[in-house]
Image (cartoon, rainbow, N blue to C red):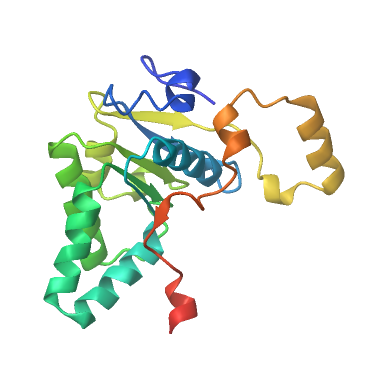
Length: 197
């Protein structure tokens, strides 16, 4: 991992980036562990009894579209939760179908949290130029957002032998990743809409 000045691996492991207002933005190709790391952060924070919301961006947008159909109150309640939760983790930013509504909705969420300096973790496998410039500007403002580049190969494409070799040659120093391997402890409001319809 390549960390920007002022942010270290220890800041992620102990989640001190929250109090220091150094929101991590994890960029890398697919399969390199962004979601795993974001889920570990969400779980570590939730263990401190801090409200956390973990959402996969395309599913989140489907969830919000459904809320619009259910009524204005439901939509506004969900948007308020996204805006105000103590820690928001948005996974796969840029993987959503880019429509004007999707861009504006994401902008509203991210801009609100940016203005109020609320802790937010983002992951993306997009080239920065593919993101809405308004969003990219806010998430990469060095006074708040900290870009972290994960340099790794796609774990899913490794053979079992390569995975075992990788696991045996690297003792994880991140206790958070060892203790919380997925996002089950963090509140997840988004379920795949493809299964619901």
